[in-house]
Length: 512
Image (cartoon, rainbow, N blue to C red; front, side):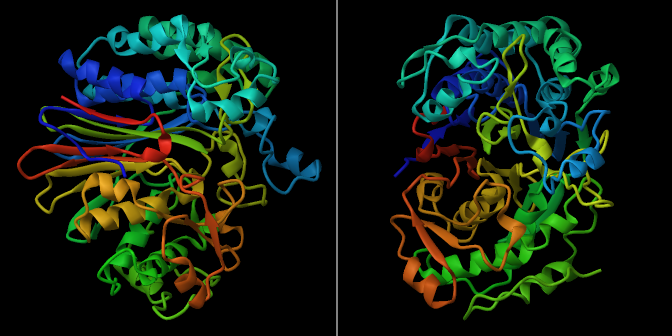
């Protein structure tokens, strides 16, 4: 069981204690929660390439009296051609080892935008801990080992050639140079510098120089739903954040049992998640609108049967990833999620810096005329789901999020319901066993929503009850594919209460 940590003037939670410590160091120097979040993320791009990196995308929510949303997801290159992929006989985007599933990465543009609006410290100071770890080395985490072995066999994966045991020293000098270029020259040092030139050349027509000049970070209007007496916020499409909010809106109107330990709790929330997400493949694209109307929430709530699993494949009416959060002494909160998509991403490396590249392009459709069809300049549908909770008067309550691919909204549905509906402490809500809807790659959950199993973590009493209600049930070991969730809760007296997910093994919630 993960203990709740408490602090008075600032807190950072992340999957890696080295990263959390870097964020706290920024707060100690007078930096903002945004400075802390960027420093934490920058360290993670060095130490956790199996989850995130500068070759990936970023979404964030910021509360500084009001809620703002940042979409720093990249766009397909100018050479994107769905017809060519269809001519090869493909019906889905390539998953690994193919540059065509690599939109221009948005992470660094996200840092620049976040720092430009909310940062207080010089960029060189914010990036200094990550630069030092990249150049001097860091100990390999237990979670890196399996992916590192495969990455080391790929062109450009030489940084991981010597990683055979946890604690082995890893140096990433090319990543360090890229960070130094950002610290000295901003986005141009990255997108128009060594990394951008290398990606342009290896793309062999997938990108043009103009693709790297275009900024991939936009401040957008966040989405909101009222649930359990609070306002819960997430990012709009192309993020799948609407699935979390839609499921919470559905769950808020259900007769939930008195305790999460009962199988009826898992059943009702799983059915709320299926009612919200069964048509995601059809409706999620960057221009999607009107997904959270009261009528739509009520219509989907009617699909939930308390006594049985329902068929949900009906027409809709008219990773890996890392999550981190930070709150500073002035009450600013940042909820930031950043990802490569699948583990080390595409398993393609930019050859000069050896930065591994994401494969977020797997979210594109190859169906002719689909609004998310793979095409130049388009953003793919995204699994990244940042979340933030405010009290009815607008004050910050919680910053929360998780890794987990398609399961991110399902994991957050459980954590937030435990926190708001049942009043559980952060450590209890974060470490409690979970369920998720089954998929194989982390991005195919909604291919067959009436056939998927409900996967439950060992330690729950839900399995037999779920099976009796008609759910196919699979039990998995604790921590196997059930995300790494972290949260910071701001209590009414101003005390910060946070928890990092024990499933991350080396995660840390650090306060000051």
